Length: 240
View (cartoon, rainbow, N blue to C red):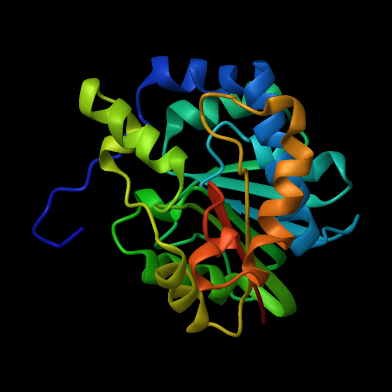
């Protein structure tokens, strides 16, 4: 998005906020959530007692789960409609309205800084990452997850947005190489991807096997079969 383009926050609508978590209640949504958490937590390694910031927390899905693991969590988002839902769901998280590109926190405030499907919707992802790096304590880590432009899910979301207004009409989907370069400014990233089942739900019963093959198998075959590059969610960690 250029400076000349008007920024649109697609998450301000109360109706969208109220229905945002409904996907997780479906069999497909529950499986996607489980697969995403498996990879994100494998990279993030959250530990009870740590301070954590969830950037672009939305309705608090990730922040609340981190709080359940015993972390001291703050969730920040620009959308008051989303935060209103989050506050109703849990009092265990410190909810705060704020911009990912100007985080309202002191330097080195958090041991873990997490952003899941947030950079797709900010005006300048590099500025947001710079802010995340600023508030990450020495010895801490940033964990960032974005939607993969090379996945079937991205094509699905784009097709949906062409038929009706959805937040994905305003999203920037990242290709894997772009994502790695973006993170590399702040350190050497460790990364992989998650969710290799398609949005149709085909293969749902074998999701764990498909996930294992996607993350560990195909990249040994050759560059034309770089399966790690095909998961719906790209997840990277940078140590500070």
